[in-house]
Length: 396
Image (cartoon, rainbow, N blue to C red; front, side, top):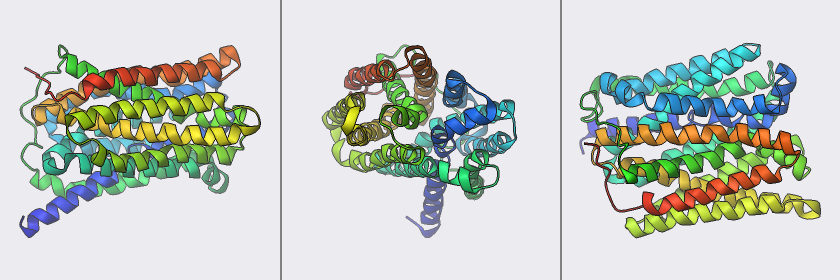
């Protein structure tokens, strides 16, 4: 590889990794400060849950339109536009009032939907020989940034002017830096990154639906816990606000560890299928420990449950996103499959935080909500058998 090519590859990798910093952190800081958000805006439990479900609804609504936008503008320009939109949403969310909060959150959701769909395609076209490794790498960065956002949300809200609004807004800075890194890449887009051929969504493919179901189930589990885990641990296990926030960080740190292991475990079709199934079973075990986390040993059981759920979820996320790229026949097919999997998958996941909040409000307990999350993990295990098949989705 020539020096210019190496420089372009290094710049592309840096742009991908910095973009990854912005793909979860604007959302993961919300859960730990939900009580303060509710107090400051007058939102009830179900309405507060909507703050996490709203981005997922935006994911679902926007993901299906991403292939068309990328076909017209090109993959990389569409990513840059999404980063600019994310910054605008974060700034709007800083403005006092419930309406700007929800509007800014929706814009952030649309922006992250675009990067969710297109970053696997960028990795496929730019780093095809190292797809699993680079996918794992950017997901590690995404989860690290998300974990830091969770753990620092309460301390930052107590120290910075503007409280929780400023603590959430600071995570617009990585998106600004990422947009600056993408700019020189737009002048020399690699083959396959520009607009052009657009494959139809593979609605009739059973394999595509299995990939979609797996994506939706793992997202359902993660976003339910992302929204309610700190509150659940405070009420069920007796943890303080800061400690509960750091448990959410542990969830994501465990996911990082699992993400690093996936390339070694998911080798070949058989290894991939076994790893996808194993990840779901580890999640189920973790959720079972959360159900058992009451009484004198509550804190220990909760921490073990959070760690196992994070390990399984982190592995499942890598495998879900890698499947949208590896199960496609070409780059256009990857965009189409990714758009389908994320639009339908996140529509399923969007119901999770609201349902969990409503069930808790109705029952006064976290048992029924946790059983719902466990059912989603079981569905993930069922979908994994087909989603991990050694096959390619046909889009024509």
